[in-house]
Amino acid sequence: MQTIASAELISTDDDDAPESGIRLEGVRVLVVDDDDDARTAIVTVLEECGADVIPAASGPEALAAMKRTTVHVLVSDIAMRGMDGHRLIRRVRDLEPGRGGSVPAVALTAYAAPPDRTRALLAGYQVYLPKPFDPPELVTMVAKLAGLTTDA
Image (cartoon, rainbow, N blue to C red; front, top):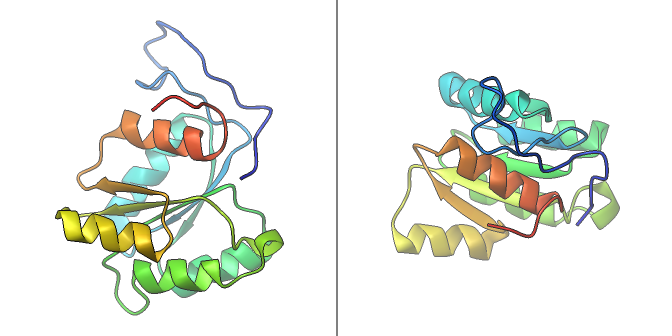
């Protein structure tokens, strides 16, 4: 897991600050969701916290993005047309570690039953969050996976 030195945990009363109080400057997050509205909502939350976000509308698009740039955290929906999130994470885990194979990953999905959680974690995700997502929780998990905080 890569640590991002330029990001920091902040405490502020600023009305424009993210609810979580966590800043994600220097953290590159790949967000994969085939639903435009859901993807836009996730991207917006993470960008408001300072993350550099790469949006992808499909598994193949996400894999292509990973070939072009280093990603610190992957956030992916599970139920996507074509290559679903389980196939995507298996393909990611097949990559060499230096090519993204060890990128920490969040499964963000409407499938919220305990067996769904277990399946996502066994497939290779480190964190499982149900939709609709709680923005501060998502930001906290991304920060934790990026090595910014051990809290959560």
